[in-house]
Length: 534
Image 1: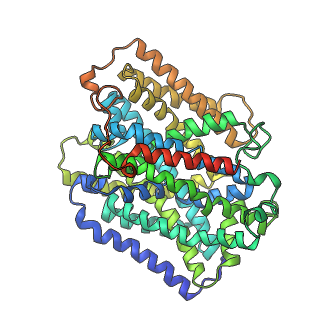
Image 2: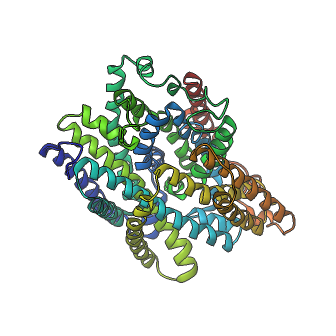
Image 3: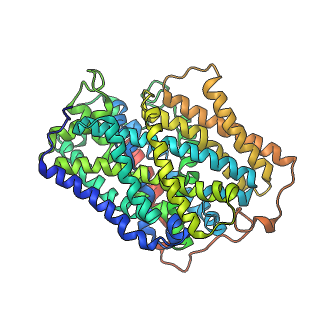
């Protein structure tokens, strides 16, 4: 099969060099992963700037780079809500108000924190549901990588998926979370280096931002202007965007999804853990430059994309094929590969930790040696990757990868967020109140998705409203059950609930090292950009 690109020997050398590099990282770091804490949590020893980039990069997977560039071409700048209102406030809240309790609890995973705060039953439900979700999301990443390699290089879909899986498995198998984090930092810069030139080329070609906007539909250059009614690309209004996406979905993902939270657990101190998501928020503000604006450029260059039989998902690859020459093609393909691998590696390391500590150790083998759990972690990585290959074809059966992914998050992450919000900030929440909140949220998400006869203009609108109402129901049931059951004592809640112990103070540090000041700067930047692109 003929690929979209004419790939030269130089391009293949660049791609091969990247594969060799990530494998070498895993090989060199294997000697630093002797204990379970080394393998699963990087020994809790990494500086904040590394964990901050990894926190951001773990999210910058195929769904972001490929899916959001497609979204930019299809919907315009309104797609930026997934980055700004749907991420920045949650990341800041995570750093300021949730990390002190995550860190003080010394939990090794999100499910383990739920055990400490509530009970074993709550931990079990979250662990099993997260394991299922992670394998399904990993399948999305593999499928995305497979279809792009098929389109760009002419490889078969099956070969593309298997090659992708083997390379990712090799370096995380050797180096564990540390290997994943260090490659994620490198991959972040590769993604920017390989894709950002397209933004620059597009802006120069069309004479700047205003020139670019003049070549696309008139409302595609705005973020908020069309949300006064539901007659916009997202098919919903500002309430659903602010509360469904911004509050519920955004907070659910960025504060409770172990894929990203695990990176904060690798930080060397509580302050480093707190500033990790805040550092990442500064990067998140500018990520639309490497995918959504690229989608706008693609729409201006290929005005019939999406309507001439060409998928919006090919917006980014088509731009690369048009503007990149020998060498840059190899760099561009490497950037795409890096984006796919960051998401895959993040999912696999998170799955491995939850399986090993929250399922295997908790229910199957409670008294094994630390070395045995590291062995089990590596076995879980292998099995998880094999399962992801099969779920990749499930992802391929859905018409939209992004809609599929958001649906998964509304089923699994939103109920967790409702439970966490009650558990961390209302000490009256009981063990069975938290359990009821989590289970009822998952059940209601199923009812809302399959049984309620409600029509929505777009899949985005359905997901936003579903997330909001799942959160409302889960929260209400958690409160109701808590009022009729016995809460834990303050002594049992020490270090894991707001108001039971003193909040950490950093008054002795310079302003640029204090989480609160950094959060205010990030929030101000977020508000300013929303106003500029209103």
